[in-house]
Length: 286
Length: 167
Image (cartoon, rainbow over all chains, first blue to last red; front, side, top):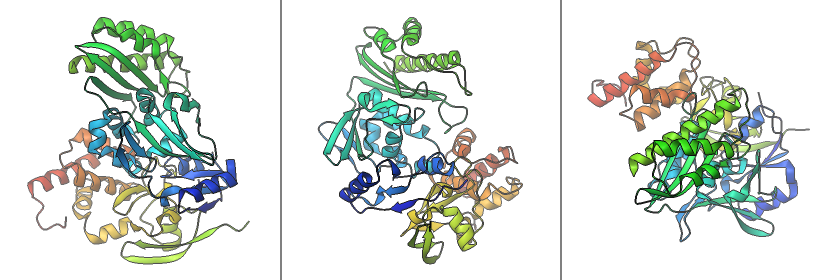
């Protein structure tokens, strides 16, 4: 299908973009790569009055190392992340998830800002952001604010971003030497929406897990942090007995709904499978 | 309501094109309806099937998820231009030799994904080729022949067997 008629404007700088967002409010949609937005519009599921194309704004395409972490500009594409040595080295969980994001042609255009702003529950970056507790930087008429990932993803396609704010960057903490990052997801076919996925950040000291943040995607309305399962791991070595303990703890964290992709029980099972795979991988690396 | 148009100036294959475009028109409708470049196809129009793939500034993109107006100042290469340039010649010959197309609807998009594989993943295995083409639907071949065609070009390029064909 074709998108319904809309207006289009390509602001030259941030102040102009913010003025347009303020002027049009809910009628405006921000266009970055458009790899979700154009699909949604072609399907008639979104009918914005105006598209504000932010790709002409300077300064949103950089990946910078700062004292606090690695700051990824909103317009950095999936393909750029995939080929970034800095991301591979300093934010390995993010780097590992990128090949799972859709397909090459979509990764060439789609952006981290777009994916994080949309907050599709089946998307990879929101779960990675939650696992690492990344910081999402928003700029609006009242200036700039930083929102922690755990306060940012509020509901189904619902985030802390207000409609007159622009998401300008996501900052990830740098991996430390005692951390092990493991991303995995289940799909029917490579590049499809994940049936279930797990972004896991482990801290390991002398073979013993001292901290674990397990963020699931495609299991609820938002990415979900499995806190009980994470706690059950602390103080233990990853082995078969621990896998079973952690799998049982997942029941307290996840309450998936059945849909056409799988039953609630089936989804919980997939979540357990991913947890077991991730802990076996951790055991190998320890 | 009069639909909004914007003036764009872009290079399509070897030709510079300057004209007003409807802002709601995606790139493949622009190519097909305005420029009679009908080699790019529209299947799903929501980014799933890959039949619409073209190149923008040297990168493969989904033409149905790209607005024509977004291509202002850019270089768009379609199957027509890429065929003429010879960059796809060995892949096209391999697709013919392996019966990797039947109706041909997916081929223009599939060939661009294949080109990306031979350029960026020269050591891809059959399984990896399958992963790479998972974003391009073919409803005729069952994919075996497509994988074989791409694999044959990878092998030929590795061993330099295909002398005389433009790379």
